[in-house]
Length: 102
Image (cartoon, rainbow, N blue to C red; front, side):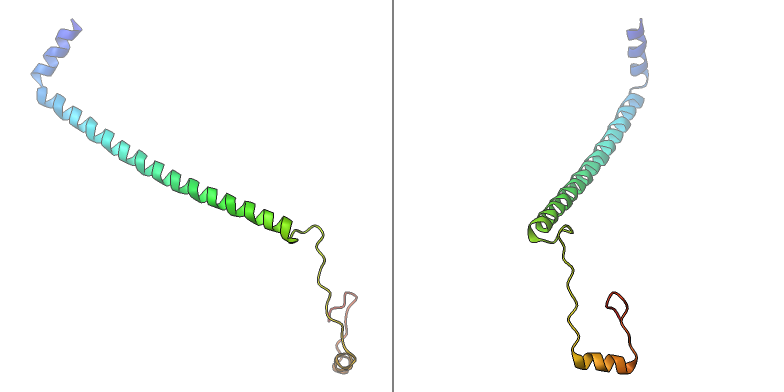
């Protein structure tokens, strides 16, 4: 009995059914377009993430192999002051603190 009612409804208003199907088709196309754009953006972001990870890994390798890691880091020693520089500094009244800074 329901099949007869469905057939009766579609035969009474065939244009409404076609319009409804066209509307659903357009909505589906819009959703597909949005999904394709979102997927393209996700792939682009994934490529950027992969590049950043690769750069970070390379930087860590360079630090470990190049002696730029903090472990074992020896700070540069300041150049020694000559007698002439010392006398000029003292005459100006500049004094060094305990760490050798002015």
